[in-house]
Length: 263
Image (cartoon, rainbow, N blue to C red; front, side):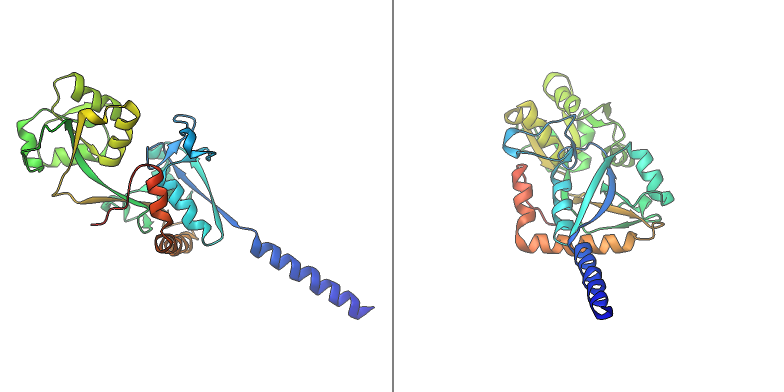
């Protein structure tokens, strides 16, 4: 009888261990609506060819989930205002944020994952407007320039002492090019392309990468004060490596009409 009880106890404990191993761990990361990297389905429902998606989708989110899935981890994405997210990451109140560019101001409080995606700063113009120019910041002094208020491009323009008009978002930036007196809309390339496709004005625009600025890398920033930050950063990096080797990362980007870029 004693042997039987010990066997049953060992069996139950073993099954509990197996069940725990099979049950995927879940983490929570925070974000904002930032198409096409991160998309709030309530603001921008997916096209029919996407099928069923989560409440938050986008190619950075899809890459993130797929990378963690290779390591048996699921991710719940919660939306919050960006300033609050950064404040909570700095204070260690949340694990991390996506998508988060690894800029010097964040290095004091964040650990950064390998990139989920890359994009470039771009000059968006009417079709072929800058075809005879080398797209450098210096040429902007000759034109009327617009940029989205609060985005990183305004900091670049301020540092280069280039005057510009502020717009509230991508659609307004594109509209001032096509309908008003602005010549160049400086913004993030992939976001602008995604917006132009939705507006059905791609054929009216040209996109020029700003060669001197290189690529922007979009990653996850993990709070240095969170006790499991390094663990989950390392797990994600391992998953991203597996995803790239399998070719699934490129498949995700192609679903959104983009491809991998390296620099």
